[in-house]
Image (cartoon, rainbow, N blue to C red; front, side, top):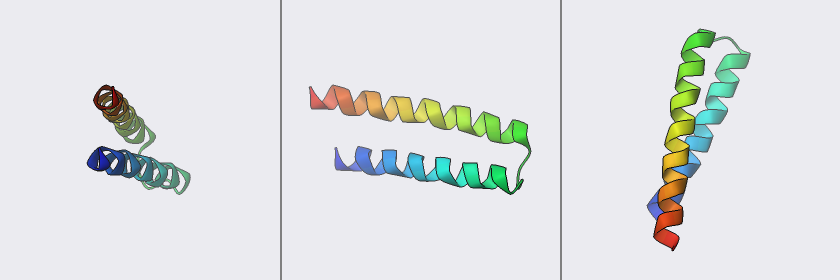
Length: 55
């Protein structure tokens, strides 16, 4: 469970980095959008696994 919580924290950290890179225009908007969508999907999977393991 601890590993999954750390993984979720890493997802949140990466999302913050992507927001910052968008603000300073380090990447193309379409590329960032694709990465953000994948990141959100990954986050949902981690949260789902955490909930299943808690029950």
